[in-house]
Amino acid sequence: MAGITEYDLVITNGVCVTASDIAALDIGICGEKIALLAPSGSLAKASTKRLIDAEGGYVMPGGVDCHVHLQEPNMFGKGCSADTFETGTRSAIAGGTTTVVAFAPQQRTEPSLLAALDAAHGLARGNCYSDYGFHLLVGNAGEQALNEIAKLPERGVTSLKIFMTYEALQLCDCDILSVLAEARTNKVLTMIHAENGDVLTWLTDRLEKRGFVAPRYHAHSRPPLLEDEATNRAIALAELVAQTPILLVHVSDAGATRRIREAQTRGQPVFAETCPQYLFLTREEHLDGPHGFEAAKHVCSPPPRDKAAQAAIWTGLRNGTFAMLNSDHCPFNYDDNFTGKKACITEEFPAGRFRHIPNGIPGVETRLPLAFAAIDRLDRLPLTKLVEVTSTNAAKLYGLYPKKGALMPGLSDADLVVWYPNEGSAKSSATLDGLTITNSMLHHDVDYTPYEGRGVTNWPRYTMLRGKVVWDRDGEGIVGDKGYGQFIERESSTLNDIWQRVEEAGPFDEEKL
Ligand code: DUC
Ligand code: ZN
Ligand code: ZN
Image (tube, rainbow, N blue to C red):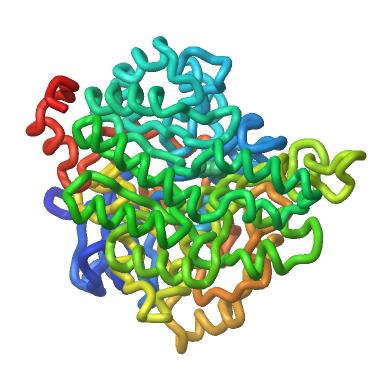
């Protein structure tokens, strides 16, 4: 019948939250897109193939997690990733995240970036439950790799990551400058892991000489000053190359946060991300506290810091210093002597050797529930901010917006996360009372979670990806299909018009220095 829309899916009676607004609205979905936002209840009787009553629960754009390591080889210590593209993206949708951007790792011995990208596509294609993209992880900034940066945008890849630490990955300042210059020319965003690798190797050698090899000494080998110095250097190098936009990833401490904020205040295009481990874990409790080898479960880099640092990170998230809260999901099994945390245990070092513990922890599924729990402490995170830092800003910064990270009729994919209604509703008290994170309830392929036993206040009830319900917590759980997740070609970043500003500034010219 002309003029009457038949929807594929209607969500009624929910409270929609975006990065800018909160409003009681119904959502009509046609095919893969959001078709209509309408006054609450007005679509309850619309013609639709499926109707979901959100019962007053919040409805948000699906989570966008742009820092996820899946199916990577040995790079961060001795092990290799516990999660495949299949298991990692399965875990993502169960935690309300509908798009992940993972890494295509170029090893030091590999001259080509494009070959690394092809290899990552080969692993992901047909295996994902969520949509996905790639950042190039540059381990070898040789001539071929530098030339290939120009080809990345036409392949839908508009960001790359470089490291200032790790033997297998560390780039010297000259290489960093070459990457920054090439990335700038091609509107590719450079993500930087800022820790001073030479100093931490020096400290590690000294700690080992004194017999300090237990997992907890990981934190002693990587004190905040190393992150502070490297962050400052990264900002200075980016400034030198005509203010190339950079993104400091997994920022953990007050000193680095201050450097970033100062650069932002000067008007330099410096962006930053933090991660749940710097909001919810501390060195005292999770590295120094556990006896013996258990601390390895919390070995990630940078390491969890102290309470004061945690407070500074919360402040940075609230005041916009950090544009994003991504997971840095980089999982290794604990009880695995070959590819997991225990791979660092040898006859010579029966209690383990922190130098070789694979660095990283799982967190793609727990990111949104942990952040949601912080809403209840209003001083910490307003609802719109939650959407901004877990979805919208990542979509903007990584060229996915407004397809992802928004609820714009006709433009946005119908990627949604529907939460349970607030306390007081029969549904919420029946299903969520005393909800505590345990590894057994998660959908990753990892034998532990660093958040075991932590209480949360809500959990995604439904997750929808391009119009399809893929997670139904009260039904069969994962109801999406492996392979439904698509590679999403990304545009250049649109956050704060960064590339427009670069264009206006003109090309980098050393003669002008
Ligand atoms: N950096 C990451 O981004 N992920 C895991 C390990 C690391 O150091
Ligand atoms: Zn890193
Ligand atoms: Zn990472």
